[in-house]
Length: 321
Image (cartoon, helix red, strand yellow):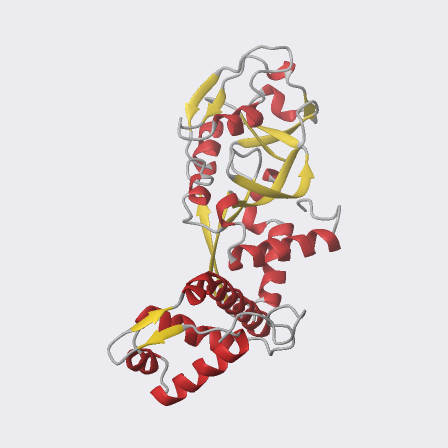
């Protein structure tokens, strides 16, 4: 069959019906098997029906796709040139169908959400999880508590899909900032400064500060302890803590102080620990985070969209309370 147009001066194929996606699927199976009997078996159809579909496709395209003999089936040059385009069309249609199905029934599966400290109990986190459940009632959500060492590592290695945490973060992690608040210093309750309404960083100079293990991204802890201080002086470090509870025990023991979000007053009242506002410390932020590599995963997309919707509807009202 000629590959020229049906009429003089008419581009090839103009006026012919376009191939269907079903026909392109059949084409791909035949090209893989190069045997009509095996291809028909894979497609759960009879061999004559498959041959009829192939002839209909060849008529639509205007050229022969396979040369057949009693022993062999070979793809023609025109067929070989067409296969990559056919594969692309079929893949695109499969993705479209998958996306449509997900919209129809909502995202399902499992989402693991990490949280450091009390972040999963913060108002913005509760609002996001409620919105996500409303949008995706068939999605199973697991909340996993994380410590200082693993709360960013688990995002990068994919053990958790998203996390409620406090920036800054290292490269490879993306954020949606949810709320801003002041910072406080956690002091031993019997410290002379513990009765003050507020303090400044110079007033805390020289006091040892709780440190974290070396596996923790240093840019994160340097921000929280303000190292170096505005005057350029380095921070003096005390004992190492791996999580918030061990940090608070260290403070209560009187061996070091620590800097935390103001929400610690609400979520972490502890015997032997007092919280005082630090006037000149930069404000801190709460955020939903995810790995850049997992950004387009359906479950991660779902929680990102839920968070964006919550943020749009509650701008300025999501601080700890």
